[in-house]
Each structure stands twice: as structure tokens, then as C-alpha cells.
Length: 114
Length: 112
Image 1 (cartoon, each protein chain N blue to C red):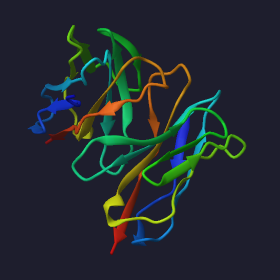
Image 2 (cartoon, rainbow over the protein chains, first blue to last red):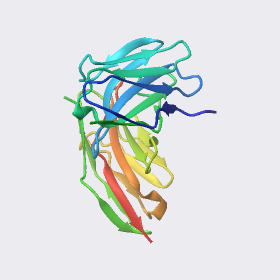
Image 3 (tube, rainbow over the protein chains, first blue to last red):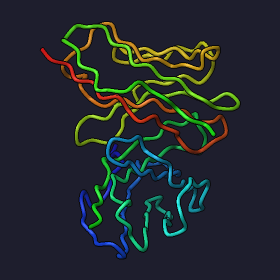
């Protein structure tokens, strides 16, 4: 069984640019969540997608957007990058919505904004 | 709003020592509680969970009991190993919710 994978592993962007991060869910999982983990902090919830529709959103501005595809892979897009967007971005997939379902995390993408 | 507070680190222990990492939460309703572990360079892994009051989650020698009266979910292990060195996160999720709400994490360093 393939776990959650994310690409790229690292990337460097400059302020004002746009970035797309990708996530491949664990087989059979229809729900994906994205988190931002700043250095020395716990992950912060960005949003969740369930069967291709947004199913909840944290306190992040609209320049953070996402997509989930029919094969349940997912993208996180960030426009107009700011220095504070530098962080580890984690995606997590689960069998279904709801707190009873374990979320399986990928290794993350380290984004540096200069 | 809902939140999780866990003890500041780093926690430095010798092999075979007893471990406690404190975690308290603030939430309305009846959240589920989790401990996740993050090894260097890896994503988070679920260590254990408890979904209702007085439940005890356990895995790999780690234990935590959901105490509603004290709003706590402290992580314990009787004898730590060098391989337990990692960052530990306490988290909660509402019964019908979607997001995990994490504490800031506690770094554990175990020396031989």
C-alpha cells in the first residue's frame, strides 16, 4: 500500500510569486487536508477537500486555494507569496470526513520565500 | 476558540527513564484527542488516540488517558529508548469536525 506522497520536497520562491504543491493520497482515501507548519510550531489547518469539494477552511486568506481531482490527488496553490509563507506544508489523507478517521500525513514540502 | 497547550521542550532524558509530556485542551463539546509523533525529516505519524472521556490510548509502550474533568491528555512511557527521540504533538478534533488542532510540539531527546 502506497502512503501519502508530496512533491516537490523543497522549493524556493521569491515574494510575489505563485506556487503549486502536490499531494497524492493514500489508496482509497477520499478526503485530503492541508496544513502549514511554521518552524517550531504545530501544524495549522488550511483546508480540507472531500470528494473534490472544499469541506472546511482554517484562518487563511483566499490567496491559499486548493483542488482535489477525481483520483483524489490534490493541489495547494498560494498566490502573491509573502515571507511569512515560508513553512513546511503537510497534506494528510483519510478514508472519510470526521474526527474518528485517522489522517495519514505525507513528509511535507518545505517552502522558502525570499 | 479551541486550543491545545503542551509543555515546553526540549525534554532531555537518559535511556530507560520515565517520560511525561503534559497536554491540556480547551474545547466546547466532546473532542477526540490524539498524540502524533514527528521523526526528523518525516511527516507526522499517529501515535495514539482517545475518542471519549476516560478512554486510554496506547501504542508502542506510550499511554495517555482522556481526562475530561481536568481537560488533559498527558503522554507517558515507562522506559524511553534512544529511538523515541522525536517531536511529539498533542491534538484535538471535534466530533463532527474536519480539522486537527495541534499544540506547538515538544521535542524529546533521549541519550544512551
